Length: 431
Image 1: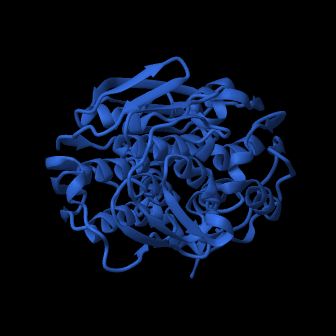
Image 2 (image 1 turned 30 degrees about the horizontal axis):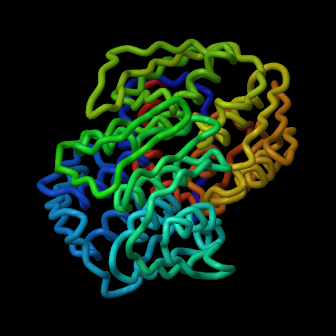
């Protein structure tokens, strides 16, 4: 499947609401399935990855009703989760896989997990190793490094674990296992990562302690069903924020976006580059801050992006690389080696794709260097099955000299099924 993307030089204008946050949607289903009582989730991300999470818990006997973006879960508690009859297909969802490993490690049955070709290349030992130290039995290719994986759950003991990488998925998997373990489990981070799991534990009535760089959870806690409203995903909003920022006279507002401080690195970098950003209607729902973000087109300049801000914008780096090519000066992105373990090796794929489109960009071991004030020439490129690469290419077409032919655009549905409709909306309002 291909999609022809025509250049469009008009300013962008209007208001849109982006889909529900992917990270929060995953976790809301997981905690609702483990809790006792009814959980109602509104604005659930109806994308392929989150539906994999939903189907995984249905396979474990949880009653879940879905009506468009509203989910109702009839939870009976962790002890009532049942052994699946068949292996669980996780598609392309790394979040489902890693967090689910934490839960399955403490459940008294056997489960087999598998995924698509891309997911089967992503490392799972980063969670399997600490989970094994708690007593989990996880096996698979290369000593449990890659899917398919077999998990024989059972009794777990608590640990104190220093995460060697900046990963909220690793932290979350250990905390979920800690919820099922004996004693108190502590995770220490050198750099703060997104804290949706910690917020969700508290929303479901659990107790968690945060002290400086350490997060601790006591095992054998009971959770209670609750109502969760999923805010708009700032990682999805980022594509439209960037599109508006790099186009003079554009004014775009994204409504009801999650502005959790562990996720707003994209806003910090945009402001550092000279973007005109305003946040309004700030409020909190279910422990998650939400607001409306308005961006106006501005003259932008290159910056250095690295250090502790990287975990706060790791998913936004592809679109920031494109933005850097339209700003003045040079932008250096570093300390982002985690990009190599996403749906694709995003360092390699971003550099290759933007180079194909005529951008002067160089890969480094842990990031990239992008020259500014460049023209996007256009051409024929592939998303490589990575939703964020596909959306980056679509935004690149707005400043391209010639049309862009995008192969495999359907992968964008993983996180943003209505992406092209929303893009057309802010283009049609301006024209």
